[in-house]
Image (cartoon, rainbow, N blue to C red; front, side, top):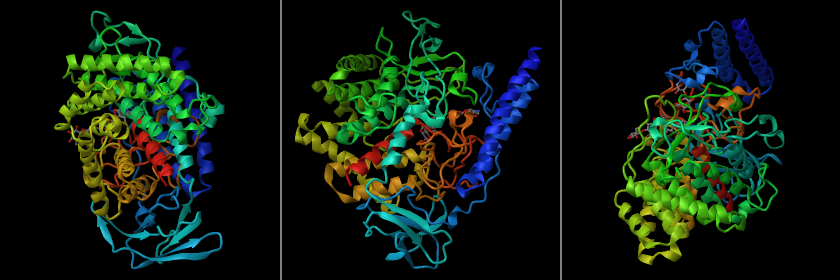
Amino acid sequence: MIFIVIVYIIGFNSFQLTMGKLKMNIAATATSKLRLIKTSANTSVKTSVKCALLGAAVMLGACGGSGGSDPGIVSDPPPPSTPAPAPTPNDSQELIKLNQIGFLPNAVKIAAVPATEATSFELVNNANDTVVLTGELSAEQSWPVSSTSVKLADFSSVTSAGEYTLRVEGIANNASVSIGESVYLNVHDAALKAYYFNRASTELESTHAGQWARLAGHPDTNVQVHVSAADTNRPAGTVISSPKGWYDAGDYNKYIVNSGISTYTLMQAYEQFPAFYADRDVNIPESGNDIPDILEEIKWNLDWMASMQDPNDGGVYHKLTTLGFSGTVMPHETTAQRYVVQKGTSATLNFAAVMASASRIYAALPEFEDDAAAWRSAAIRAWDWAQANPNVAYQQPSDVNTGEYGDGFFDDERLWAAAELFLLTRQPSYLTSFKAMTASAGPGVPAWPATATLGYISMLSAGEPLLTSEDYNSFQNSFLGLANTIVDQTENSAYGVAMEQADFVWGSNSVALNKSMVLMNAFELTGNQAYEDAAVALVDYVLGRNPTDFSFVTGYGEKTPLDPHHRPSFADDVPEPVPGFVAGGPQPGQQDGCNYPSSRPALSYLDDWCSYSTNEVTINWNAPLVYSLAALHNKQ
Ligand code: G3I
Ligand code: 9MR
């Protein structure tokens, strides 16, 4: 009897899922963009259905993927297994590649044209079908990371707002070009709204979430202290409450170091462009009050982060997680126990930096007076814990299989925390600590394990009145050294974008976007146009000027990811993925064993659920997109 009930439930769910996707596939035949759904999503759905049927035959283990033991599977259906889709024919090399969202009127405007005999291009104004520019294509250059050759079409001289078509004799596709002062606003708002869509512990109502409305998941009011985090005050199994926050990514866990850089980057966007954010309404539940939406959204995560500090000693847990990744289900369908796992130095310093930054920035709003005071003391206590425990690397416990975010080098986190605590408290000891770290932790492209540059950005944007000119200039020179390197990379690239072989790592799109954030800070400091131009190129890269021809933000562009590794996007019955998320992007590791169309670094990308190493979405990849779009929009 029980067996029959299980078969019925699984079968019913599969049927619903199949119906949902079938509906999508019928609709998909209408346009070439949606036709892509058919190849990618269909394969995954079939795998999912197959697994569900196998589950009915009590063979769940056969479909669990390669993740080892997954306690979540006890109550959650397993993720679809990985090796799946056949590579799609890659005709993208024949297409003109450009930013599919648009160009600001006075910005540099460049498209990459596939190798061609042609030596010129035309830009046609769609409104009256007249050629407004005939331009020379650059010399053909090969890009080693994709093994493809392109010529560049520079139409920066066209500055009038409007809709245009770029055409090159012999090239099949005429590319659409939008020029306007507001071209980035929708995608900016969507990238910010993505955080709302990834909120834990709350229902998303249709007023705010539209067709992606969903029930509340993960209350996180009954979280256990894992044995790796146990001490006399909080023995293993102690229950704590740690609600709210954003899910990290396509998975439902919450990780301090990745939350930290994401939260900081969004706070920088606000701090540097407060007037812009004062009236941006992204339709979240808090919209309409006097507080900028971006600060409300960030506070959702700050509240969670604050609860990750052990009140007894000031140390911070590395993550809040189930023991294994959950199945491919909606948030409210997961029931596996959640734990806080091991305190560590990187999490605690990262936390100190974010809390100090939050305390300084939110203190300007009277509504947050109490929070700002609490975050200040949380930051100081965390710093003190890290002084007493300077070298505690996170070690993934043997029974925990979720994201590791391991990092054994702490000088960059220490430098960042010291910068934020100095700016908050103005105590010279923190400046001394900052300076002591500069030798070993110089500026590098920001990333979750590389946070030194975040400290430099704060020092340079907010520290001038507090520093001697000698110190300020010295920090600025170090920082501009990084920005100059990125500009040089731009000039050496066939696509005119600062992406090199080493940048094609897991989350490569965030490398592009974090470089862009560095450049926009350098532009603010110096007014040197080369920095802004290089930043535009990197945003162009993510929005379409790349060898895959994808605009990597879900829902924004002509060819966008349709099947990201994002559990809600896969498990709901909505054809379109949750919008506004940056997909990880190409990288040759192919750690998930999916069937990729190419192994070249810039082409090793697959728009399929299977591809968690190139097609997952993550909070730390969205944040520098929000920042970069805000910066470019506001400095045009
Ligand atoms: O640290 C080494 C470095 O020494 C070496 O030179 C370099 C060469 O590739 O690799 C470095 O390690 C990389 C590490 O990130 C740190 O950058 C690994 O190769 C790389 O596989 C690893 O990727 C991380 C991935 O998890 C796998 O652990 C991504 O940065 C990280 O964004 C991603 O994060 C996941 C979470 O675990 C779970 N939630 C989703 C999220 C996004 O996919
Ligand atoms: O879904 C998981 C994703 O969020 C992680 O980033 C990724 C790497 O840690 O792992 C994914 O889970 C996979 C697991 O590691 C192996 N079995 C297949 C899982 C995805 O279906």
